[in-house]
Figure (cartoon, rainbow, N blue to C red):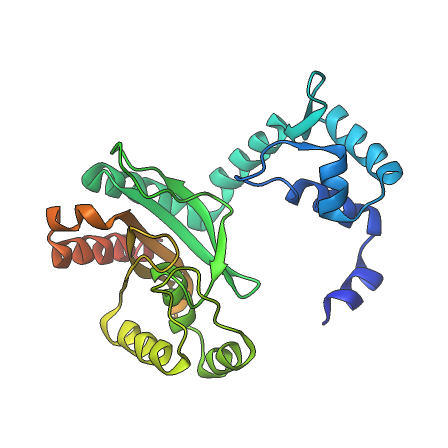
Length: 256
């Protein structure tokens, strides 16, 4: 069903506008003025004022009276905590991610596929001063980065062929793959070896190792990844780190 049909038949435009406003905020833009929100959402100022005022009243937005800028409110954090406690994947994965974070002292993230993109849904930051950052909610194309390629590799062949034929491979960094043939070879390697490792494909100077997390019946749930600066690679036994990640993923999968 096309998005336009869904919106016209099953939802209210006002709800979509509220969602647009909340999604206008990001890690790069945590504070926005009314004008900036309007530009980002294409919602008129008059309509936006009513929406924003309601969101402030309900605690989903906070207004700084000095700067006249808005930021996300604590009510969203409270709802997020409910998701974390009740979501099966998160509840099973977070304790094991915390162990992995303790063992490696590196950035550990959980990623899923959403709208044909990789999305980070949980992250534990590095303990090192020099670190490779990952943010919850961040998205990236499925051809760039270890976690993204894992998510693409374990889709069915029809999905992979359609994705490759309908998406333009844009260079994010100088090492981002831009060849469909090379990507297909990389996906084959991932399926044969059960992990992906990339260097600087999304962020220069950062490398990532990622493994798949499956449910019973080989249903792909997401990916478990460790990300750290390339300069720290020599400090690790990479094969041992891959085994550590695979073992963590198996423990997640084996939980009832």
